[in-house]
Length: 67
Image: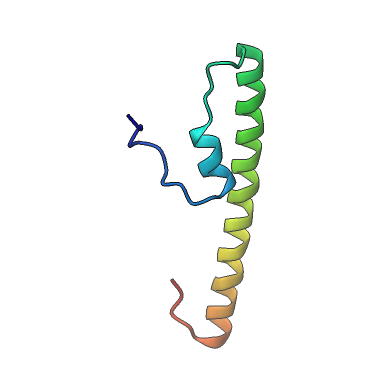
Protein backbone atom coordinates (compact mmCIF):
# COMPACT_ATOMS: atom_id res chain seq x y z
CA UNK A 1 0.00 0.00 0.00
CA UNK A 2 1.25 3.49 -0.88
CA UNK A 3 1.86 6.14 1.80
CA UNK A 4 -0.74 8.90 1.22
CA UNK A 5 1.31 11.51 3.10
CA UNK A 6 3.84 11.69 0.29
CA UNK A 7 3.60 14.47 -2.29
CA UNK A 8 1.78 13.57 -5.48
CA UNK A 9 4.16 12.34 -8.16
CA UNK A 10 4.79 15.21 -10.54
CA UNK A 11 8.11 14.10 -11.97
CA UNK A 12 10.05 16.80 -10.14
CA UNK A 13 13.09 16.09 -7.98
CA UNK A 14 11.25 16.52 -4.67
CA UNK A 15 8.59 14.01 -5.65
CA UNK A 16 11.21 11.52 -6.75
CA UNK A 17 13.12 11.94 -3.48
CA UNK A 18 9.94 11.40 -1.47
CA UNK A 19 9.43 8.03 -3.14
CA UNK A 20 12.96 6.75 -2.53
CA UNK A 21 13.47 3.93 -0.03
CA UNK A 22 15.68 5.25 2.77
CA UNK A 23 16.28 1.87 4.43
CA UNK A 24 19.60 1.15 2.66
CA UNK A 25 21.20 4.41 3.86
CA UNK A 26 23.48 4.60 6.91
CA UNK A 27 22.98 7.25 9.59
CA UNK A 28 25.94 9.21 8.18
CA UNK A 29 24.46 9.08 4.68
CA UNK A 30 21.09 10.21 6.02
CA UNK A 31 22.74 13.10 7.89
CA UNK A 32 24.52 14.16 4.70
CA UNK A 33 21.26 13.94 2.79
CA UNK A 34 19.50 16.09 5.39
CA UNK A 35 22.26 18.71 5.13
CA UNK A 36 21.91 18.78 1.34
CA UNK A 37 18.14 19.09 1.55
CA UNK A 38 18.39 21.89 4.14
CA UNK A 39 20.79 23.76 1.84
CA UNK A 40 18.36 23.33 -1.05
CA UNK A 41 15.48 24.59 1.11
CA UNK A 42 17.53 27.69 1.96
CA UNK A 43 18.30 28.23 -1.75
CA UNK A 44 14.65 27.90 -2.78
CA UNK A 45 13.50 30.13 0.09
CA UNK A 46 15.99 32.84 -0.92
CA UNK A 47 14.82 32.63 -4.54
CA UNK A 48 11.16 32.83 -3.48
CA UNK A 49 11.88 35.86 -1.27
CA UNK A 50 13.79 37.57 -4.09
CA UNK A 51 10.91 36.92 -6.50
CA UNK A 52 8.39 38.27 -3.97
CA UNK A 53 10.47 41.43 -3.48
CA UNK A 54 10.69 41.87 -7.24
CA UNK A 55 6.92 41.48 -7.52
CA UNK A 56 6.29 44.00 -4.74
CA UNK A 57 8.60 46.50 -6.47
CA UNK A 58 6.79 46.02 -9.77
CA UNK A 59 3.40 46.36 -8.08
CA UNK A 60 4.53 49.56 -6.36
CA UNK A 61 5.80 50.97 -9.65
CA UNK A 62 2.89 49.90 -11.84
CA UNK A 63 0.09 49.87 -9.27
CA UNK A 64 -0.62 46.14 -9.47
CA UNK A 65 -2.46 44.23 -6.80
CA UNK A 66 0.02 41.32 -6.58
CA UNK A 67 -0.73 37.77 -5.47
